[in-house]
Length: 174
Image (cartoon, rainbow, N blue to C red; front, side, top):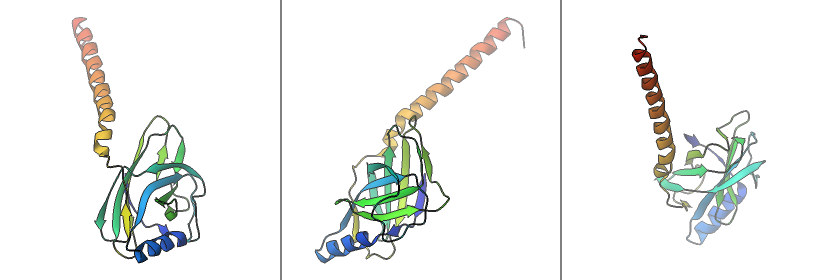
């Protein structure tokens, strides 16, 4: 899933950017929080309403000076609808939050690892003032076991079908 989000940048997030920028540094996004409450966020928010999991960013890159692409994988055994997303700086500050009343982005089930990709549009902050600290993980590799399981299931299903068809042919039933 890849969704372009236009989050609400928090007052604390803006302050962190300006503090870092005045020191010649960049604010560093390191984690994404996922929660299950849907609402219209405001700039005064310091936390998600109902955070269920906070995940290190697996991979990220700057797409344009005002757009960042990030990917995370939630491999927890939790169950919830993802209705709010928080972007956290390295010091734990909630930099930005996305949520929309009445809208869910995804469903997390214990049986399935949830892979999420976000394109974060940064409006209202100086270009180049935000950086991503990721784990350097290529998520395309991580989905290989799931693809292998699906291929095995499909081949097994085809094998059963052919075996059943041969049994019917040997019995003279067409």
